[in-house]
Image 1 (cartoon, helix red, strand yellow):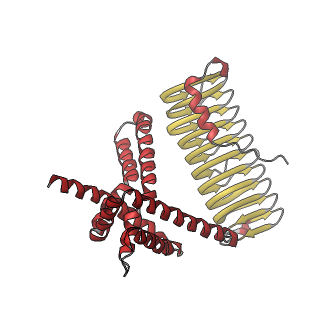
Image 2 (cartoon, rainbow, N blue to C red):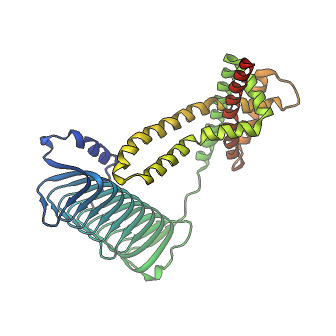
Image 3 (cartoon, helix red, strand yellow):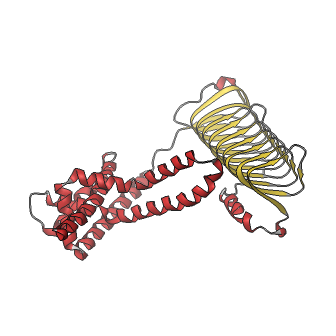
Length: 387
């Protein structure tokens, strides 16, 4: 049996990036508008590259369709070739002659796909009237498969509701598998899940039903994880000592702020840490208040800004915890000096971080307190100069 081809969805982004520079040598049509529509009476006699807020295909495309939409892609007509679509919503009620590749929030398939389906989505619905000629490979949070799949069904889902027909094997990882109606599986029904599948009495399986429990973390994986954490602690300790050596006065002042104004430092630092999320939230609010046609320009502005802000926060986090670990070292009974306090505090914080579950509280405290302490140290310096 020929294996399912799995081209990276990233190739679609590359193809879309090339739309603006595509020349006649591509032997394809390009369309860019708020709404791109191929009406029922229209026929595109070659490949179509389309970008817009909404892309609606009611007619026929005698070739491939590559579509990037800000809202939705709707195919109720026919595409004789393959479809690659990236959009918040993709609805296929018509016929696709070859393959369907999608990255979307919601995929609904009630028509037919001649070869295979590869989808990464939050929600996937393969309607009872849907037909997939060969394989279906799906990564989704919620998936309902009630139609006909000619060969194999594979992928990972949190919840999978399965019915209809599968002409080959089922091999999925699902948090919860439910046979929601009459189901025919020509091959094996294999699933990896923490719980038994529900409704298996409605399944007619030609092979065997195999349930595999989720694999616990391997001891070697755990050991490598512990080693990685220890190396991180050593690296951050070295960085903290280097900062203290190169900037002793400022480091002492920031450490004092961390001890004397812990809550205030935490508040300031939390604002810095959350700034990428706050900026992304602002972008979402602005996008919600503007017309859909302005979505792509806003994405071009806010996207790089959010990424750049997150990068700055990430870089700062490498040395942000220095005042916090210095304050922890100063809290010990003996006076260890600047470097001794940094080393002792970093060791203490690192040991707590290695403790399962509890350890994840450490970065949630150390990072904002450290960042806020640095800010307060500069503020105090400016006040002293002003006085």
